[in-house]
Length: 354
Image 1: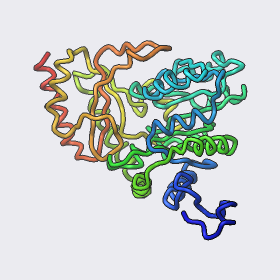
Image 2: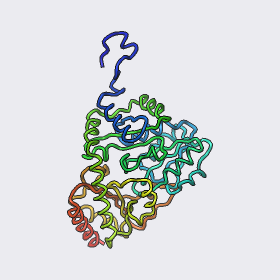
Image 3: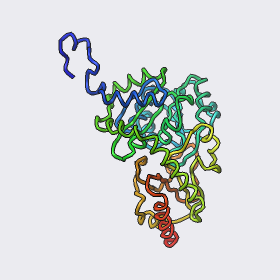
Image 4: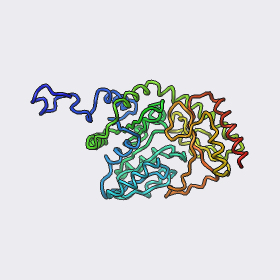
């Protein structure tokens, strides 16, 4: 940005004064996401984790107490334990099923509670409105990672959340070709969020923002298809003899189904499966031969993915004893019968390796 006169420069008379302050492309996506989310404002960051960090840093101070769901995205835990704790924030993890019982964990210095529904990998549903009501009654703030649902399936601000985090890398992209985070805030929290964002200059790249704008135009259609395909696959997996249980809140027998049905308008393509006891070698035999399912972490694109997971190593407020190996699936946009055939062959390898 160049200023035409000395006086314009001195008084920063320009729509955009510096690259880190924004651009027309950034403004277009931020405004669109703000409207979609029912928020007061949005900042765009270079990753989902960056969106988490700027949200947390805009709220907590040294000496504050922060409650974090035990089912949170693991890199979020690592930021809390490795950075916030170092700067004097006391981190405490809580049972994601606690609901309104969160009030028993609130202290005079509890500044915020971080929720995620469903939980990362383990897919527990949290009663977000009940938690928000309890926390707000004590003057605290509620922060939510809403990447699984996006604002299309869960209007987090309307459910009482103050700051909402989305990894645009996932469903906003749809093509597994960008890194992007979005953090929205209600009117009360927007000034602090924007101020913190400006202090860090944690800006998303221009091409990623452009690709995010592109993805926004088809996100609703893609998300609906992902959700339908994933639910059909979850029901198919429930009937498999190799499967102990399926972790998907849209299934009627899921422990979190009632909350999901009350608060959400749909489900995305991500869910978990607990296999009946099997060795690591047997699971490897199943996964290594898959042709349509890739093994990778960054879900939300058009392709189907699977990874093994085990929450036991990092849970601190709850225990993780699922009864068998865990697999996290993201169901993409491929033909569903082809995906089932690929998994059927994989299960045959699993049985043979046992």
